[in-house]
Image 1 (cartoon, protein in one colour):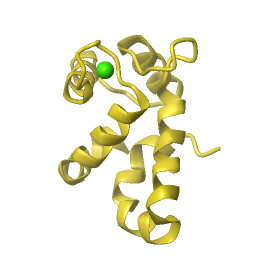
Image 2 (cartoon, protein in one colour; image 1 turned 180 degrees about the vertical axis):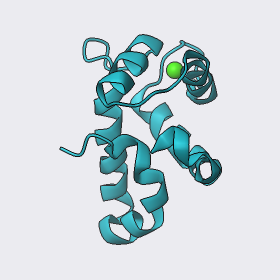
Image 3 (cartoon, helix red, strand yellow; image 1 turned 90 degrees about the horizontal axis):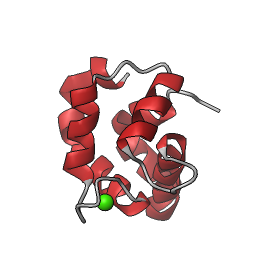
Image 4 (spheres, protein in one colour; image 1 turned 135 degrees about the vertical axis):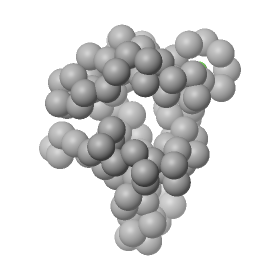
Length: 104
Ligand SMILES: [Ca+2]
């Protein structure tokens, strides 16, 4: 398993899409989702995001985590479903380019 996988794949979107096709690419995003989700709820919550990003060796501030959740939470339940996470990753990919230090 590549532990930093969920957070440096934004750079590789174009080549991954070319290699995997759109469906395979969504599958890869779903793998990233599973690394970060709360296994009991099947959702990414603030707590699961914090716990799992620490486990993956990422130092992300609480306000940045909260911001990511707010950005991605489309139905307002305070957590990210798999679909919300995938949409968020697609939306964030261009603006993550200048935030490498946060996401590497
Ligand atoms: Ca939600």
